[in-house]
Structure formats: C-alpha cells, structure tokens
Image (cartoon, rainbow, N blue to C red; front, side):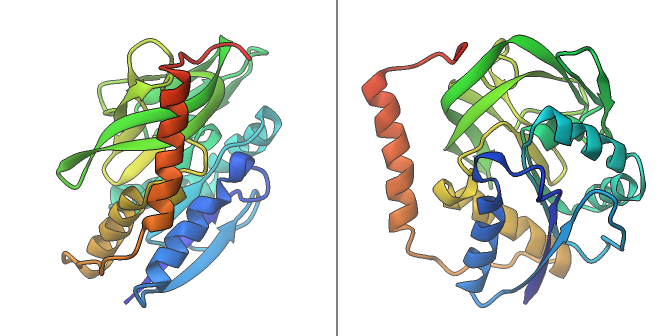
Length: 253
C-alpha cells in the first residue's frame, strides 16, 4: 500500500511546528509498511495534484497569508477544491484554515479572498486567543478529546454548509463566542490547533490515514496497532498542565 502527501506552503506557513503534522503522518504510515511519497507545493509552483491523497497546511503571519491567498486564486486553489470534492483528505491549521474559507479580513481592513472549501469566513478581532486547548470531536463514530495550542486573533464563523470539527472544552475555539472549534467538509478539516496537533493526538492522525486509504483503495483498510506510550504521555502532560492551572479562558497576551 502507498499514500501521497502534499505539504502546502511549507516555507511560509509553518509556525509552531506545524510541519510536525506531516512528519507524524509519514512515520505512522512507515511503521505499518505503508509507502509514503511527500511533495511540497509552494507559492507560484505548478504541477498536478491529482495523485495526492492527503493535503497538509499550517499557519503563518499575515504577510505570508497575502501571498498564499493570491496563489490560491490560481491553479493550486482550483485543483485543491476539486480534490476535496473527490474526498481527498485535508488538514489545515490556523492561517490556511482561514484562507480555505471564503475570506479573511485582516486587522488593517484588507480582505484576503479564500477558496471556499469551508463555508466559513474570518475577521481579525480585538483580542488574541492564546493558550492550551482541549476540543471534543467525533472520530470514527466515537468522541475523543484533542489537545493543542491556539494563538490567533482571527475570529472564524461558520455558515450552514460547514459543521464544526468539534466543540471547545478549554480554549476560545473559532471565535471565543459560540463554543465551536474548526470546520469539517467531507474529508477536509480546518482548525486553530497548533502544537503541532497530530503527534499528541495519534488517534486523530490514524483517522486521517484511514480516510485516505479508503479513498485510494475503495475499501476499509485496518491499521495495525502501534505503541503510542510516548504520544499518550505527551497528551497527558498537556491535560495535567491545564488541570493544574484550572480552566483558563484565553485572553489578551
């Protein structure tokens, strides 16, 4: 078996170690003898994305989002939207999550167009949400708690065509108001969870791999179990830190 992963905009959209999401997917596949091909697609680059099973994109600064927003209005954005309609898997974090919605209105008032994969829009808010986060979401028919770290001033709101990836247990989530975190459309997921997300949440990482294998091979492919002692310990450390500090509401830092 094999999978192909496309890492989008790696040079600019990689704050808080978001590249770790790619490394986690690759390693968890290799441990199971699933061959993985990783390609990187940057601003201005071309080439077919049709072979890609999983797309991963991270967060960045506003100046990087400007360049990415422009690039997404071309071939890359069209190919990505088509792939998602064909059930390719996407994990987008923070800045790219915002641009995979309809638009992001920056603090300076500039509106950066997105590509509308998610029925969502983002506006820069007066507060910055920073801190550990716990998000409860449905994964493979059961609920699990994801841990991560949020750092954003953008406030994202969902339209009727998107559903939240999960609900906040601790943290601000999409906008600090409605208790929602992230968005999901088909096999595309967007959220504000840095950390990076997948190393501390191996069950969610495996869920993305399963979705990709199902799409490629048109069948449910069981994954061999792995020893996740280290990953679970890292996750537990985040939860214990939150418990020691109490339920911290994210605010201005």
